[in-house]
Structures are given as structure tokens and as C-alpha cells.
Image (spheres, rainbow, N blue to C red):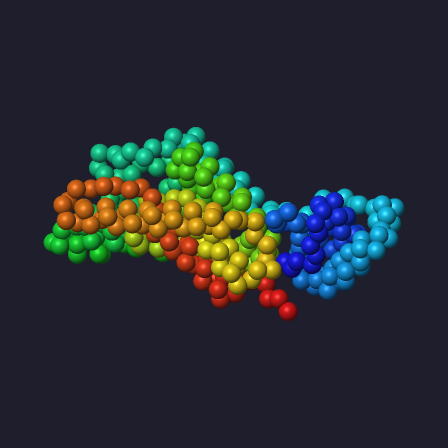
Length: 325
């Protein structure tokens, strides 16, 4: 996006956007410190839009423009960008959550130490060990965290846990699908509100095809990082959300013509949340390592951190960004 004009009065900005719409140019208005900036989405329309802005403002200065001279405002509903992919992900997450609730989700463990999950979670988790519990012979991978906390004489067995057993047997969707699972109502509400806020802006600036690639790359990468750290029992789209935050933060720095209506305070709050929990988890880890006393913190923070840096990396390298001329 590029800024093509600034108006002191909102009604003038609205009239100018109507003029642009009549010329088949999609634009939006952003309020900034009492002024109204008009942004054009398509880079190919910038030259014409700036020319129209100069003509429009010159007429305003000499007082020649009257209400009758302005072109009729047209309905722009068909031209407003709709974040269909973000809405689709939102809907899928809601559906899977309701299905898991219907199937009777339980966080408790059975007597033999195996987690109890509804059928949909067993199919969508990155791995599900079935009858082989973590730590037993021929078990699934339990994560680096567990290995480092285990006694030295038992670590060798854990190192030989089967990594991505289900994926290696053809269930490749599991690399991404933990992102569409959620633990509780509060968990899904928090994640999906951020998804609607951030996802629609990135989808609009990036384009739908690039956006799909971005979601898949950051989702798979953050899931794998979390899996390597803690094993298969995690869920939530917060790794992708962290990637969106990292992407927006970097793009606002290196590509200011792209419009993201996110205050820097909100971005910094999100980052403080991630690194704050990292500090708490490190303290918990060392306390358990030294004293053996467990302070469990059930937050998949490895996916948050890896997602954040993957988003920053993609934004910085412009791997999926539109190339402006």
C-alpha cells in the first residue's frame, strides 16, 4: 500500500476515496493525529491516484469544487478486500474445538500414564503414541526438556524415542494440524481474536497465495520446534500468531507503505508475554534440575518463540512479500 493524499477533514477524504472508487481504484482511509490519510492498495494505481489527489486538492484550494461537481459515490462492497482465508481458518478452529468438546475432552491421564484425548485430537496431534507411553521401550519422542531433567542412567532410552512416527507413516497433515486444536474456551478465544486482528491485515498486504504459504511454513516450523522441546502433547495456533506479530513488526520497519493498523504497544505487549514466559520457564527448569521439585507451566512457548523469529525472518528476506517497483 502507498499513501497518496492527506486531508484535514474526514468528509473530504471520503469524497476523494469515492472519486478513486469511480476510477476503479481501491483505497482506504487511516486517521492519524487529527488528519486523514488515503492509502491505495494496488501499487500500479499510485501514479494515477496521486495525480487525482493533486487535482482534487487544487480544486479545494481555489474553491471551485461544489457538491454537484463531485462524482456520485458508488457502492464499494464488491471492491473491499475480504480476508476469506483468515475467516476459513477461524471457522475450522471453531469447528474442531466444538467437535473435541462434543467427544468429551479430558486433560487427565489414565492409570498407565497415557494422555486421554478425544478422537479428533488423536488424529490431529503431531504424534500420538497409542499403547507405547513416553519413556517406555519403543516409545514416542518425549522432548528435550524431559531428557535433560531425567537421571543420567535413563537418558539413553529417551534419546531413542521414535520421532514423528505417525508422520513417517504417511500422516503428513499432523505437521500442521496441532495449530487448529485448542485446549479450552479461553485458549481459543484469545488466539482467534488475535488471528482476526492480525491475519486479515497480513492476508490483504501479502495476497492469498503467499498468505497460505506463510501460514503453512510458520505453522509447521513452530510445531516442529515445540515437538522437539516437549514432545507431541501441545496444541494451538499461537505459533502462527507469533509469526504474524514478528512479520508485522519487521514490515512496519522496512516497508512503511504497507498498512498495518496495529499499535507498537500491542506488538511489544505480545513480545513481553512471550519472553516473560520464557524467563519463567527457564527458572522452573533450573529449580527442577537442582531440587527435583516440578513447577509445571503448560504453555507451548517454544512454538511462540520459533514462530516469532520465523515471521521476522520471512519479512526481512521478503521471501513472501510483494515486490514493489
